[in-house]
Image (tube, rainbow, N blue to C red; front, side, top):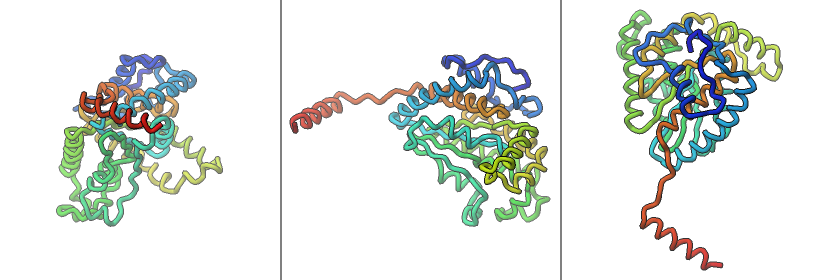
Length: 310
């Protein structure tokens, strides 16, 4: 969302209003992104209280939609979350998805690639964790780490044993353009196979990240969340911002859109994410499958058999 703080609220969760915020936060294809133009503190017309009430309703709506999604068994959904450290990805998953049936939802967090994973192409390990039909999969960090962390730290690419990369100097613009292309092809393949893709970039300001790091240090119960790596990576803030901008510009597609979510206020990022997921599911016009005439007749027979047991 750009620096303006003006857009319609979602207090009553009307479908057209949800679609409006979905449009406002979506990165259109072939758009050049500058994150400096986006306000990480934006909350629209929401207050913390109105957002809390709406999120409660959204959880109920999402649970109903997920039930239809699971029963239809026609699509799968992949939700991608990317952000700087402390942007609130874990909290978003917890608060937005807490109302749905865990049987139909799986969260996977991608850490540093293992030795075995490095022996395959960079998309291989992500293929293994894709959701099956009727299920929602959430990637907390994802295949996009391969154009974020490795772009800021190109030396990591040497561990991939790529045929044409022997030195960092060989990692040029052509290399990155090819990697964006491969990610786009990967996601287009998933979409054509029935996977609905929704990607969220939680846009956190450097000032707010600093405040959240300090909170982790000052609060004993949160000390475990903090690591030396957090401080080390913060030194590369500007490099990461440029990497995110390029990622958003090159890989937001109609079938796999990116949404820039203002993340300085966690309560707003959670309501925005839930609204977009709901709006996306509603576009599918999901319905509980109806039985054929023959199936209904058999159901009646089974009912009679069970009733005769009494």
